[in-house]
Length: 122
Image (cartoon, rainbow, N blue to C red; front, top):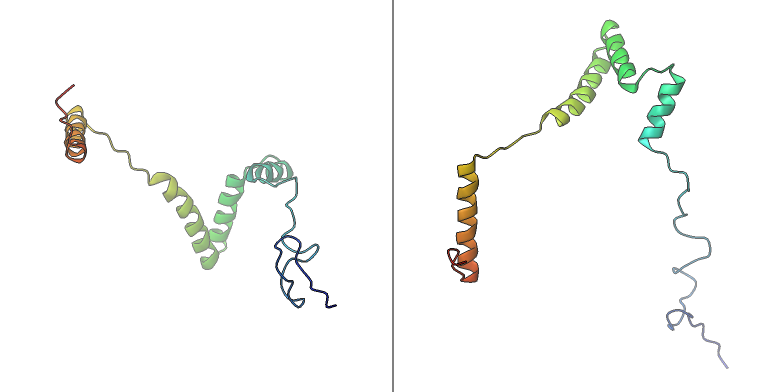
């Protein structure tokens, strides 16, 4: 009598030893203590006699400029400008009352066309 290897979960025959789940394989579970940016910045501040990360960044930038290190200075420019421009590039849109009413009327008309309900009936 020939023995057939059957997978207990799927009910299908097992393959010839290649592929499939193996004990202790796959991604390991993450650690319980996750490192956060806030924790890193606080630890950096503690170890640098209370100086903030931003302060150290500015000091390092000025040191690169004073040492005429063009490549490092450009990297600092890019780093700082990317951060600053992202926070400065906010667009605030304010509409007047007339504009809001015009948009409401246009929306009501479009909705009426879609649903066949007259927007003037209440």
